[in-house]
Length: 218
Image (tube, rainbow, N blue to C red):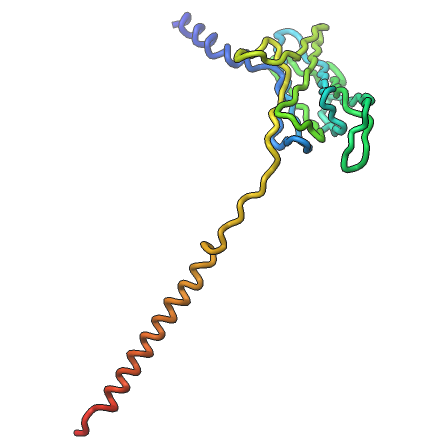
């Protein structure tokens, strides 16, 4: 029984371990728009804590604006670079782009301990007009170990250290307008039925009146 239980724990634990990498999600991100990016950072080490997380932004498709949500016990720093050619936005030409966002724990007490994970949120844009965007990430541990999550998939299998990637959905489309005829038709239909009923009653009353006028005298 003990051997079987251990075997079950290993089988069940493998998918969890395989998926316990740094991930990024962005449910409202669209090409050319702004989106809330949420980075989920688990500590995979059994003995060391995560003390620093460095999110690297793409250079070939630069992002020019980012706002960082505060995290208790951590300090965020945004590093920018200069573009060879300015990017034209609604606010005018922009010459700087976001190179990376660095989160660092203020003290060992605030670090992400073994078996725990942290969430780091930022608002970024305009996002590239591409299907996906990768954010290679460096994870620093309290024992000096640095794990670089920077590999892109080359086939069906996931690489050992996959880079966090978001899939950009298409531009938002307006919902189809409701068919007014379907919504409005019950009211005229009811009025028509009522009109027919009133006309039928009037006809019956008229017939009765005619019959009474033709009744022979007693």
